[in-house]
Image 1 (cartoon, one colour):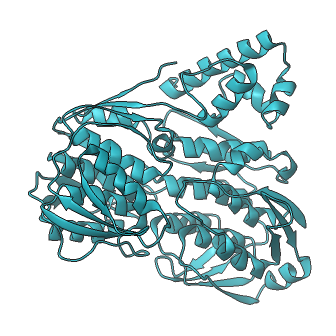
Image 2 (cartoon, rainbow, N blue to C red):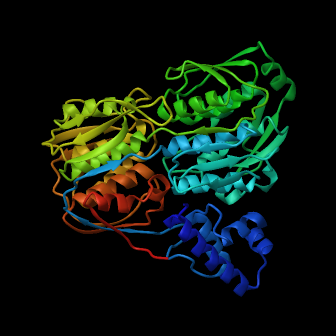
Image 3 (cartoon, one colour):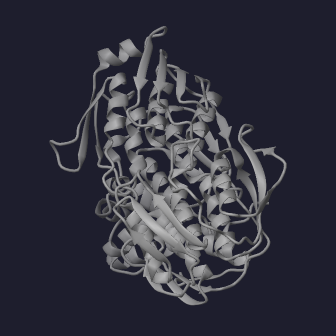
Length: 523
């Protein structure tokens, strides 16, 4: 028997509040839709509690109606109250990958059939992508309490109805270019958004998609990508037997996914050199294989893709578990000096991290290996032990997979603050993410900023409570929460919307482990 989940109950209640506010305002559903740049059917679904809705969307509707739907401010100022100094115990299970889920949602648009993504985390980033693709005619719904997400694209994506506000708030929206180039000769998309991690150009994407006949003018109209497709070039490249080689100028996860999605609908053979072999890219490869696309070289830096002129297949796919979430809980155990078990950790994407931790005297046990729901990814259970940490001899820096994951580097800054000695953290990838690490100073850490990419962290830290506003970057925000859990006393982490983008039900999951993390918001 189907039981309504807590989130679905909230959606229904939010919908009723919105309907009442709209009626009180004397507005029709169409008028409200026009004000927030979405469609009348979307408003109808929201009011009935049947629409995926992010905190951003709730805030936008509240502004138009002149009412506070939730106790949030400007896009989601939900806060955490943290009583630190408590030990953790027990076990937690790693949820499916955020980065894989949002890439798979875009990849599903090459399929005219029904896609079911199984076990998808109900997080703000997923809701946000759902808003974007629903606005262009894609049917998206949670089909049961197991968090399975059903996606059914229309015959033609209705790009002229794109929810511009939602699209501007996520970098993933630019990946619509790949499926759109097979449906339109011309189209427009808004500039990419996402975490504030410095200037991130999309030039690698544009160079990759140029091989399929796509050219993009990003300067003529401020804030808009004007895309034009050379149909003759696309026809040539997508002829059976044609081999097209793409050399990516950066080994990025998203650009590799973007090139893969474009290649999926190209009946010729596309060779992608300098491809990222990272976990989310592998998930996209496995999914496309299930659709009938031939892909060789998965897990390497060279992919050979032979696509199909049309894909129309009903398919179910289970995204792999999230190694970055696993690292979050590894850090939680180490910073609170606790013993916990982290179940379903994707070991192939954590091996370097664990080896670095060994050099820091971290103690842990690794179970026998078993297989993820996708039938390919290798999992283990990790039991973290209370450890007397020391600073590593060498600097800690990220590298493309199979190196230390770029997203995991901030957790090592936190762990270094718990280790005796001085550690150099070198974040060479992003222009200003290293600066965010200095926020740990408010909680008692000794952090010396050398430049925009390097910091020294000296431990062992005597943590103290603080009241901090969350930075607009997911992993730097997450380490502040963990540091607060280690700091005896009461801390407040304000405006945690960015954390809700990447972690599902985090406060409750931490509380089950023994942490004291509460929400400062109520419906």
